[in-house]
Length: 193
Image 1 (cartoon, rainbow, N blue to C red):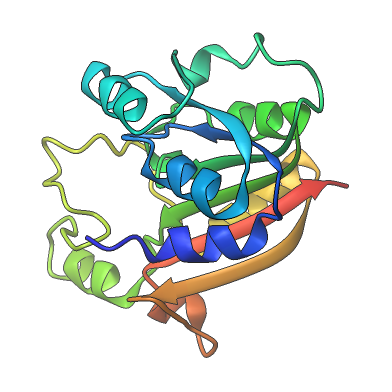
Image 2 (cartoon, rainbow, N blue to C red):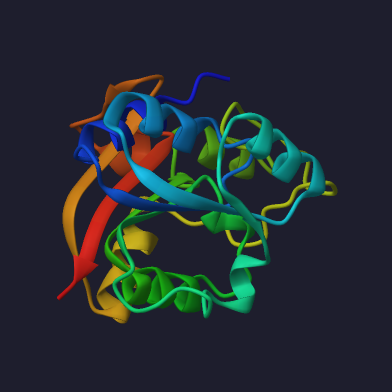
């Protein structure tokens, strides 16, 4: 699956920024930002295979559980902290956002929008959605907290984050009309108020 959220994230990151990529997977996003923007940073990943893939991609990666906190990083240590397509797998999303805002000047979060019309239709048909953005069946999904664009806006308010930019996209295009209904991925850039 092409990661359209990566393109948008890249457009928000200035050259030579300090970046922390939480749940970095195979490190492709951070490797791309290093190559195109000269960023410096770290990835955090818990999965053994993804840690090895990140190292092969030239990423400084720390094997750790994001939800255990980011205590090894000081306040304001990074310009940007990214959580891309990982929010829905967090048990305590509020705590993770607070930690992002503590260690970074700005946060960027992307997630599958559970409010997308096809997901709603699947629920109306009595089934949990399976799609490009939610590719797992209900019994084997790593996702434990699905949310809509409106839900994430509410969480930002709760943690005292000011949304700097908000895009809802579908297959690489920004959705302007009825975005919570018509967009499959939410992409947010925010900072502490």
